[in-house]
Figure 1 (tube, helix red, strand yellow):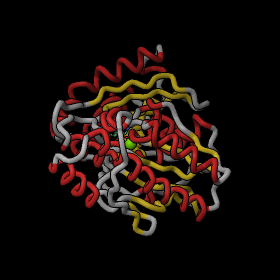
Figure 2 (tube, protein in one colour):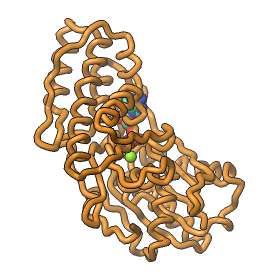
Figure 3 (cartoon, rainbow, N blue to C red):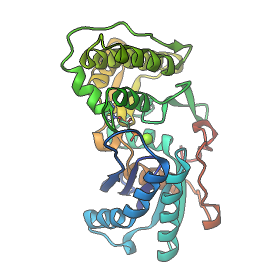
Figure 4 (cartoon, rainbow, N blue to C red):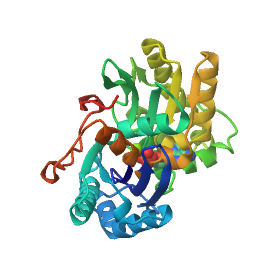
Length: 327
Ligand code: AMP
Ligand code: MG
């Protein structure tokens, strides 16, 4: 079975094609970026509407397939920015209707975990899902994907983007913060905010803004200290979730998981507790169509079916609201 998956939860319009043996036949994307400032939802949606036809065709070309070879269309139904989700759902509906293919809408956060299992061999990991808008510690426990810890305000990626924006850089800011951090001279103490199993970045962002405005600290030192502080927070709650669930695997996912320093710190934590750390290729950490295709295959094979008039979007669906019948 071959599935074409469409991703459009935020800045990325992605189309992936996978078969049910777990082979990635194509994974193409086009992302909305800015020189200065963050994502403007209507502009990101315009970007997706403009690029969707081209990205679908590029994915089919890369896989050397035509729509005739595709057995299933899947799309990100939730969670995400309503404006952009709507374009992906619309494109999926058009393809399904035009070519007479079944259609399935899936949860994006769970897709990050499933693609990790498919491509790394992880069996039952705790996922540290660190992306732009989302920061959650997710694991499968008691018949559901449960959130063991999460951000109480903004996602860690958006937080890094905001720090970079304050320093005068555009979107995405995460890679810029990493580059700056390599030129650091010293560590600057910053507020560390872990609250039970949750983390928060709002106060920290205010504190860093004040430090930037004061002119007393270099961007390099601030970038380095920001990374050390927030990655320690994320790994503290990830480790506690692993201990609580008695799981021996950690999987990193989301765009921030591309960060080499976060990867180093995660590997060290896992080594210390004799656990395995699974890290994906960057193309599968960031938002991508392949993971949407794979999640579609898992759910379709488990019997899930969706009529066109049920193919909604649900920007606020929580990971633990999803009925899991494919495990
Ligand atoms: P996603 O929403 O999962 O596509 O991830 C996008 C987020 O990942 C943005 O906030 C980026 O700034 C962030 N990001 C991408 N690459 C890196 C990196 N190397 N280090 C830190 N953050 C990154
Ligand atoms: Mg994501």
